[in-house]
Amino acid sequence: MKNIVITGSTRGIGFSMATDFLRAGCNVTLSGRGKALAEATQRELLPFEGKYIYVPCNVQGKASL
Image 1 (spheres, one colour):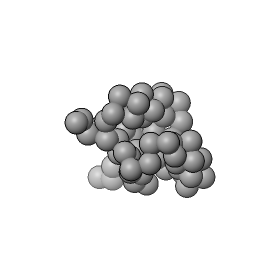
Image 2 (cartoon, rainbow, N blue to C red):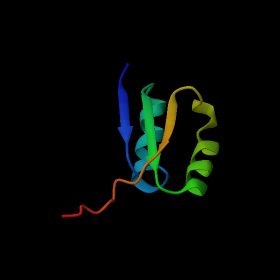
Image 3 (cartoon, helix red, strand yellow):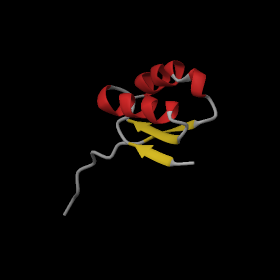
Image 4 (cartoon, rainbow, N blue to C red):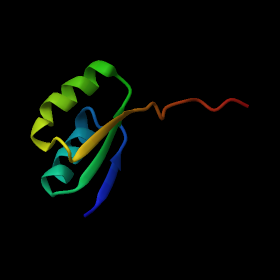
């Protein structure tokens, strides 16, 4: 079984990739920035419950010098 991590998976290409991997039987770790989008994403993925986890994450952070 494959384990997949997808950042930005609450919409667009990331969400499409997540659903494709879930349909293929993979375990998926989803992440995104917004709570509202996360809740909507999880509602849409109810048929795959137990095959994914959602981790709130913002990878866009700016490096400070």
